[in-house]
Amino acid sequence: MSAQVVVVGGGIGGLTLGIALRRAGVPVEIYERADELREVGAAVALSANGTRELYRLGVGEGLDAVSTRPTELIYRDGVTGERAAAHPGGDSYRARFGAPYWGIHRVDLQQGLAAAFGDEHLHLGSGVTSVTGDGAGAEITLADGTTVAADVVIGADGVHSVVRDHVAGPGSGPVYSGTSAFRGLVPVSALPSLPDPMAIQFWMGPDAHLLHYALGEDDDTVNFFAVLCGPREWDGGPRATAEGELLEGFAGWHPAVTEMLAAAPQSPRWPLLTQPPLNRWTRGRVTLIGDACHAMLPHHGQGANQSIEDAAVLAGLLATVDPDTALAQYPRRRRARTRAVARSAWDTGTLLHLAAGAEARARDAGLAHYLDRFAWVHSHGQDGPAPAR
Image (tube, rainbow, N blue to C red; front, side, top):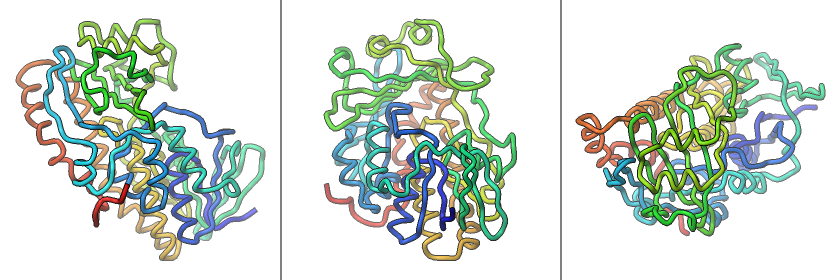
């Protein structure tokens, strides 16, 4: 079999890329190892730099209808609950940055993107085991032994990317950050102590923090992401832990925090991984997008957004210049920005875990200017008024 462009991975970045290429008239096939697009990670937050691209692709309004738009971004002391800093969300955020901020169920997002792409060229249950290529094209091999040739192969296959091994070599993947996390979904009705339940909030404290936001079209569920320092070393993926380990890590924190963590079954504990900067994103006619080349810590909520940005840039290049020029220009357009976002996410994780004292007070003073300091993240690609609701 052959195709002009093959995308490996049917996640957010891969599906966005597929939609963008098809809208530009570029033939594309997507191969996804999962048998169905199901919930992984429960929820995702998308900021204006991501949502504006989805509007440009014609899928923004449908996804907006199944999303929550946080009322504020609030930073709190994890023990006292005191507001350290707050920034407007909702319509104010949208007016400033030209597109909305969403909290959305990940499965709703993936299925919305898949519906826009269509079934005909989306191949589920099609894991890729290897990639080969040269300057004239590339080929993937599926788990059943089938091979697919293409002019261009794009790895959108996440942190454990098979395509990255071909491009950058074995052992080039992400490393453990020394921090780990628990996830959960809780009904808003189960959180009587929670102030501002429709806001996206960070609760900060020594060696830990909690992020949560409401999501879904009914605004009736809160997604939380609880981060702890340690353990020092980690091998493999998520692991089951002793019951109560999560609550123990937040002992003594504000009742709204412990109430939320106790209201959901304890999840597995996930290692937080980060990708050391790759000097090579492209090899011949094979390239990478998203977590396959720049997996980053989630403390700016930018993993999915950067994948969407990658997809928009790469699709635009492949639709307008020859493949070799496109694949040469693409890393030059994306590498510096994704490195800057990843570095800032790492630094933010450190700041969120400070104990009370002079350093924490200086952090809080800086957080009062968060949206000004990080407007370069949210305003990326902004060139006009906010899309109509």
